Length: 350
Ligand code: BGN
Picture 1 (cartoon, protein in one colour):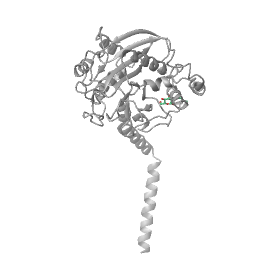
Picture 2 (tube, protein in one colour; picture 1 turned 180 degrees about the vertical axis):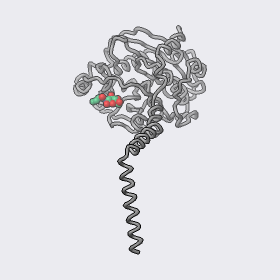
Picture 3 (cartoon, rainbow, N blue to C red; picture 1 turned 60 degrees about the vertical axis):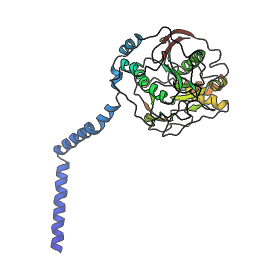
Picture 4 (cartoon, rainbow, N blue to C red; picture 1 turned 45 degrees about the vertical axis):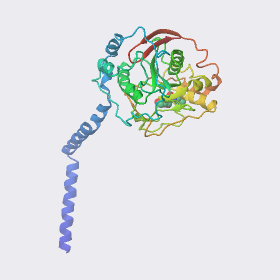
């Protein structure tokens, strides 16, 4: 028995000294380095590579040219002479499919997209032919230079909205290049322009880089303002904070006028949506949200824009300006208004 134990001890001591010798040799460190490189190459790099959006490397100019060749001079929205069915569409459309992974592909070209969506009227308008839509919805997209995203977005959003049997129009609002991007201002102007064109019931403020994943996320307004982009992949499909109102949100005309729209003072990135949330609170309105598993969005990758350093101060003083800073008495000039087949493009200056 003792002999056996001694033998065992000797073998353990031998193993330890073998390990010590191995650990302190250059070969060991070389092997460690190689294994790290292999782990990085096999697991980490492909993940980052998948996150990389190949469309963004194609110059925007190409997309602009493809687009600008296809415009419609005389484009009219639905008028009273065009008969609409009397029967209201069902509350829940029979065409809904639920979750569908958004297609983010370099292979999409405008020609194919246009071919597919021939039922969309110039300027990006559509309404169901077999029933009367329950809401007339304007999708307002503040825009600057993201043509690659725009193409993916259009290819995704038209069939999505059609399946919901909406009477809708899509508006892209762009600001004079000399002026710094201002999301709140563009949304206010988009609202005024769209409401002059058609009697919309509902206005959806929509970032071009967000693709809804589930068509049970109904693009319509409620008695209370709605925040719709509840669960975004970038935030691990979790709400980043309770007071968030950015990304995608929906308000009726009355709700917009009641709070005087967005502030026009937030130039650059961030804060205008938080200010809107404060406006809603200030006017005793709560925000509605749908369930996380339905209100899911995929965010297209892009470089983070420079945050506006003045946004904290603007937010803290925001409620003093509610009455005079907003959608009422807003002065601007329309530089261009172009009816593209899948959306209306409005370029403005102030
Ligand atoms: C927040 C931004 C929002 C933006 C969300 C999500 C600000 C103000 C800080 C007081 N708010 O941080 O505008 O929608 O992130 O990206 O920066």
